[in-house]
Length: 307
Image (cartoon, rainbow, N blue to C red; front, side, top):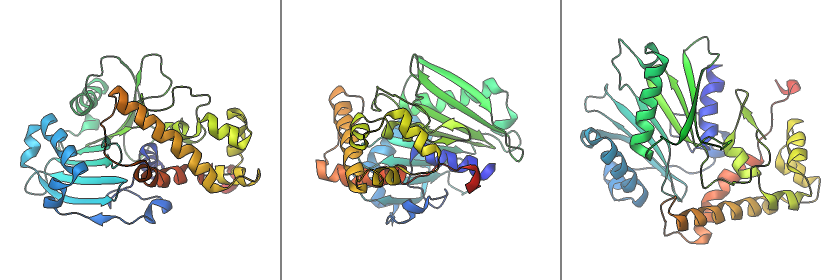
């Protein structure tokens, strides 16, 4: 269960993990370039992420950058820790296209003798609320659900933060041991016309990042399939790529359709001011989004016969 839970955290954000996280096979194929602290501070994406962190938590200005890396145009990852190597620690994964911090892992901000999971549920929720509010803004308009996970090895809680009336949470949080993991899994830049939830699931919960990619009218039209039919086909253990092949549609055609929709949504978000503007060309954005699309369309649902 522990292994599945950690995998769920990564899948939820479609991350390109550093050595601190388990990497999906597709992501391992991408070239991750190590970065020095000096390189991070002059890198466009890294510099912006640090500025946001320093404004949210001024004390982190004295933290050391103990590890950093990037996948060019896709993601910049930074790990900071209090000097001494045993204190507070923060890991940031920032989208190389949008400049948005898609995942933050906050560790060891509570005393070892009383870790997060030793607190009451209300206190745990308060800690998660504080982290999100500091990095992303007010959460007053959000509805929040919190539930313990069935993990016999480690006490774990999952929290979902959704805008009122929305079926898709914007933030998904896992609290385990002395760490808070926050992933940006949806939001205003995701398709608003969600037809079907749960094309894929993690720990019996809809994988909203996959839903955001696959609820695409142009994809349904290309495959000549309804959202419900696509979900039913995926449930048999087929991938989107295999379903497309059965209809004489190539993998590249599927990638192109989904990637274009996601870039159009990015541009709409920039125009509305919902996400930071970037100076990348359409071609650069396509190159950055393709690996994420590929991960979703090659994914398969685990059927009983596969277990």
